[in-house]
Length: 425
Image (cartoon, rainbow, N blue to C red; front, top):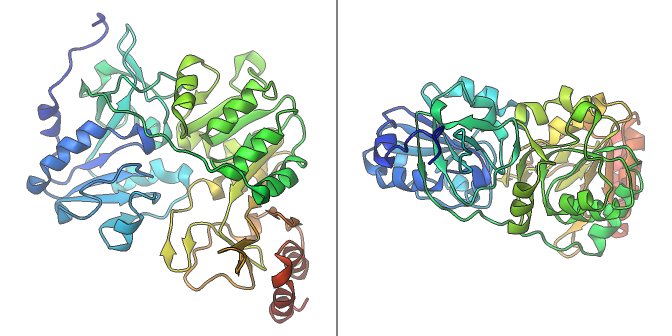
């Protein structure tokens, strides 16, 4: 061990720091300290009023299922597939939020915070990187006590998410394989939507896309562009291909980063690539997703998905009626930021139908109980495989007619009749 690295601490003594009322904050996704939470759950029956705060866990856990009752309870800021059923069963709490506000919400909510993170192995100075995620954890470094779980499989990445082990209350080593997140290959509908988006993104744009079939197809179609930047809360495999195509500017003026993100999901190849270069800058989410920061990006083009759009342009992106699927995430952050950006634009993408064409995703009114993730005033362009509805600056009647035109043909007559009742078009 190098001279700059303090000796490790026993896991048992670190667990002893979890006292009654402790708010254990852990990063999202692969930033989760797996061994620490495994061991904490082994003590679950003796804990008192412990809360685990986290967005988007990727592993199912005993405390998610309510096994320990209020002794150890999960507080979520974004539901994932791992905990949706547990939330529906009443075992998980959900805090509504916009992603850039999560650090603020955690500061206010957590009376006795303890941050526990997974990190890369230390360098000779004892400095670790939070690896493939910065999120809210990076924003809290230096503010709250932090425990570090050094994972030899975590790549060391560049950015403002570094920590000296001497500044932690303790650290230990535990090897955990990173979870891979496969992406469904784009189908013909995805490619049609992506083509309509890509043709509206000029050279010199700053790109925000998520992980999924449509974002992957958009990235592929932008490979012949030039001078692009990336400022996105998520960095996935498709963006590696875009960088390697030569479409992305690799350094800005005075060496400023041109590829900025707060977390990364994808394949083992992606995680390896991130550890092998310093092109991607990881920043805390209160930087990457703050609307003012987003709005400072040149020619921002933001691409986000939804599940349902009504004829006013309201988007339900986090629930199917009363059934919660996720949360708002960064969608509203980037829609607002795009409005602030010079020559900015935002795209809400969705197939026109669901359930093999039997249900329209363009609807007269959102399903009862549906949560409005993006309200009508911040929605710019809605894209289906049938076209682009440009909504910003349009009257209610014009918006409704534009949305009807991009609905699946078999639903247009019914939607037009509904539009006449709703907005007189």
